[in-house]
Length: 175
Image (cartoon, rainbow, N blue to C red; front, top):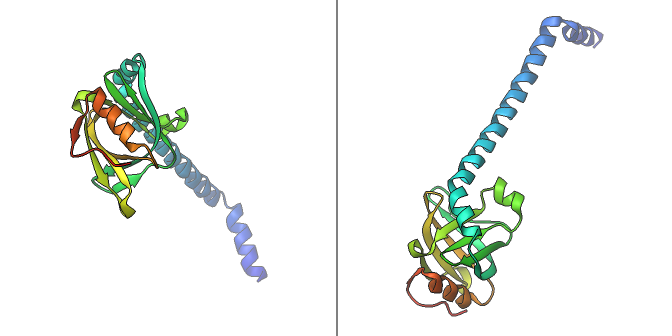
C-alpha cells in the first residue's frame, strides 16, 4: 500500500504529468468557450434575420393580444411544445408570436414575425379533443409551422388573425 501511494506521489510531482494535466484543462476550457461562441453566433444570426421585420412590426399599433401556448412543428423532432406562455400580438399588417420575457426571446430565439397576407390559419384537433390553430407562414427567411392554443376563446384569436389578413383554411374553432 505504501509502495502504491509513493508511486502516485512521485507521478503527481513529475513535471511531465503536471503539464499533461494542465493541457487537458486548457482543452476543456477551449471546447467550452467554442461552444458558447457558437451559440452566441447562432443567436446573432437568427436575431439579425428578423431585425428589419421586428423594427417594422414594433412601430405598428396592436389590434389584439393574447397569451397562448405554442407548439412548433419541426422536421427532425416532430411537434415540440415551447415551455411557458407566449404572447400572440396581432398588429396592423402582421402577427408577432414571442416570449414575453426578453432574455428568453433573445437566447432561445422565441420570436416569430409573420406578414398577415402570407399567413395561413387552420383549426386542428389535438389529443383529447383539444383544439389548436395551425399557423403556417414565413418568419426570418424560413418556413414556420406551429400550433397555437389556449383554454378558451380560441375563436377570438381566429377572428383577429383572419381580420388582419391571414388566409383561413377550414372552419372556425368551436372554443
